[in-house]
Length: 213
Image (cartoon, rainbow, N blue to C red):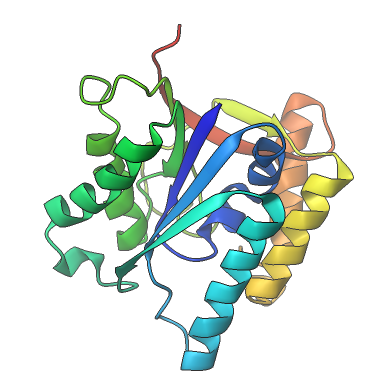
């Protein structure tokens, strides 16, 4: 199937659905669209490193990617129609059947991207789309009081899925052990969701709509 993943930042694809992304890339045509260009790190070297990591991930998984030129943490200064049109141009050419994107969490960039994708993915506008899923970024969704409800789980127990996710989490940034984005806490989260469905590790999503039913 043709699957599009739309994220705000270079790393959200791993923190939001890293294991699932690896799994989907095995048998589907996947495109990752990053709305922001990764300029919110401490130095130009860090920005360059972040882009290299993102490109390496996409190349290794044999998925296509597109990075838009919006600035991190500045999406609220851009007319939302501009962001929608930029994403919609890519969407229209790719014509995905399934889309994954952010839930409306505490981070304003995540929230805005999620709102933009609500518009882009309107079924009456694009006949190709069958399913829209939201994912959660740890540490942002937890305090946002949004309506994220886990109703779909993906088994990522297979060693390749978990190993690739760990590899890229640690490449992007090594967060302190108690940070929700640290590998230790991400692994605990995956194990918890795995226990819910009776597997070793899983990632959770919210199915927003399913037009194929």
